[in-house]
Image 1 (spheres, rainbow, N blue to C red):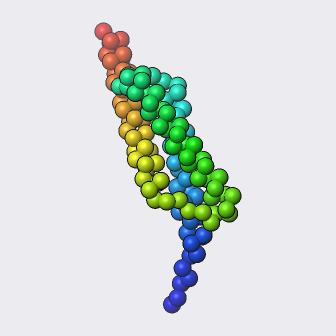
Image 2 (cartoon, rainbow, N blue to C red):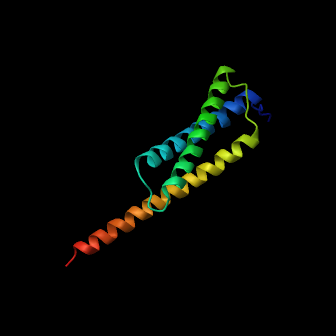
Length: 116
C-alpha cells in the first residue's frame, strides 16, 4: 500500500495559506477592538504601542500573503518569522479575554447597583 507524499508546494498551500489567513483574522479583530475601545487595564500609551505591534505584524503577514500568491504558492516563510506572529496572536487572545472579563465585571457591578 503506497501513498503519495504531497509535494512541497501542496504542503505549503495546505498549511501555510490557512495559517496566514488566521493571522490576518486575529490581527484584524484585535486591531478593530484596540481602535474602538480604551481598555481599562491598559494605559493609553501601552494600548497604542500594542496596536502598533498588531498593525506592523498585520502588514508583514499581508506582504507574506502577497508573496505567496505571486509565486503561486511556491514561496515559504522562515519559521523565525512565524514565531513572533504566533506570540502576538496569543497576546491578542489574552487582551480580548481581559476585555471580556472587564466588561462582565462592569456589567455585574452595574446590575448590583440597580438592585434595591
